[in-house]
Amino acid sequence: MKGVRELFRVDGRVAIVTGGAGHLGGAFCEALAELGASIVVVDRELESCTRRTEELTSSTGARTLALGADLGRDDTPSEIVRETLRAFGRIDILINNAAFTGVSKLDAYAVPFREQSVEAWDAAMRVNLTAVFALVRASEAALAASGRGCVINVASIYGLVGPDMSLYEGTPMGNPAAYAASKGGLVQLTRYLATVLAPNVRVNCLSPGGILRGQPRSFVEKYCARTPLGRMGEEEDFKGALAFLASDASAYMTGHNLVVDGGWTSW
Image 1 (cartoon, rainbow, N blue to C red):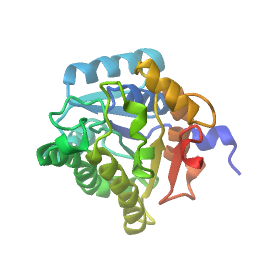
Image 2: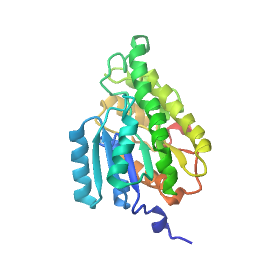
Image 3: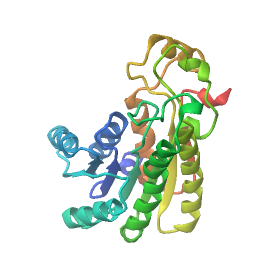
């Protein structure tokens, strides 16, 4: 029987992390690099990806690849897979983390419902949900060949429950319908893929709660008051959950949605 430390190691495996230059994506990259994986950082700006890879190599010694990519384009998923295989010859872990969130600078998106546009809806759906489908499809063969291939889709508590809009009163923040719909769709896509790609590839979902990132004080106070653990999340809170789902520690799990929200959805 393997020990717990061995179960969590991912030495020699190659992980693609979309949105890898961002806050949460950076924590995911760091966790996997610390456990022995080579990391492909995918994000919109190549410069940001390069900074992230340099940080990872410096702190962990991990092999890395920076890929600037627009997930809204049709040819991006195949390009990501092609460049990853060219650099490392394999794909073992795919983290679908990139998304338009409630603070993304997208016109007519994080605004009151009546002001949200179809164009903003389409753009968010394209990146948050359609790109996940396309990237999994493009990488399926490589993931299956891994023997330990796994996909982790990063959803949200707002793919599970409706928003309390009173939290946003008096702030410039919003909670777009497209974000909720795309994240709910991602949870269901996880279940679909888990059955279709079994037994060669595991597919699970990670649904974070709110993460503290300098939001207005009124929002933070209201959010914390509604959270059983009495605080918002921090990036570090999600590293263990990601490591669990990406490693052999969860080898008998697929189709699961792991909610890490301080108890927000327990009420």
